[in-house]
Image (cartoon, rainbow, N blue to C red; front, side):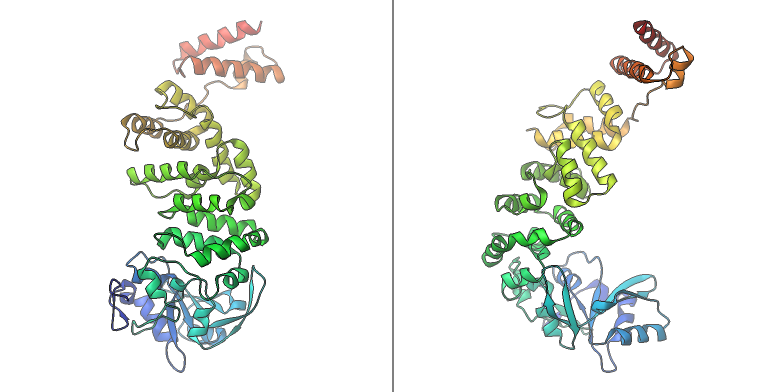
Length: 422
């Protein structure tokens, strides 16, 4: 059943973190003297898939006080990051490792769980969300699988543990997690039981905090199959209740294609703008729906505003228009808008004209208006609304002139503007 996985005689053949002295130190400290400690969760899943491992978490039979005591006796710093749920972060040579006492859920309300500590790795595994996340790895590299997770990993299948509806009711965020994990690890159609349970339980999403929804969506959007899954979520009516607007999976797919063509790191913020923002009103709505930060909202507003003049273009703007775009939307807003306009066009991802336009925006400093209100006051324009109108007129004339820098040309524009005000 695991012929394609790097497992032999029940043991993981290769995992680079076993050569890490910090990981070995955790095992030496917490695995023994009547307690057992294993690596759990995403680190095990990704190691088996030969994928990148971001962080390594441990589960242990030891109670939190025992974990803290052993760490302090070894001279290690402890942080009670989730002590009420049994999680202690132990710092080893500057690297944090979360060590969590085995648990069982005794009560859930769809958002959080009340737990009690236990000593059974199997019971701890059975309380997790998906089979591929319930694997554990002991210090001898033996893989422990209580939920048939290895078979699901090999089949690139994401399944809830036990009854899908029950798992979802324990924490409705698992609806979004299912789509994220399918986008990252699944192939083919989604698990039918899971999908049907999600449709039946989708109203539970309304009970989640907007911050949790936002965080999960951003993680989903950087996966390789994000566009396909966003499209499936939209078709199933999952996104409308939480976002209050449409989704644009085709545009998202094109942005992902453009990133791949440029060997660019996935940009979660640009991807959610591509997927959910067509107009400035969309950015304002998502600010409230997802509790976006001021910086995230501003980026979306600038991109949407700049994109208004680029919708429907078959080819990129010429340099003069690009300078105007730079001036009005600044560097990031203009680059985002050009990328989205390219994504909306029928041009290929490798199109040279769009590539030259992107390079122009990347390499050209944003123009800065060389006039200030003080310049007009010095020429006799009194402070007030009239001053502001005159400055805007001067700015428009400067833009039409092609953003000149020469003092003589600037003086001419200023003189012409003041004459028009007489």
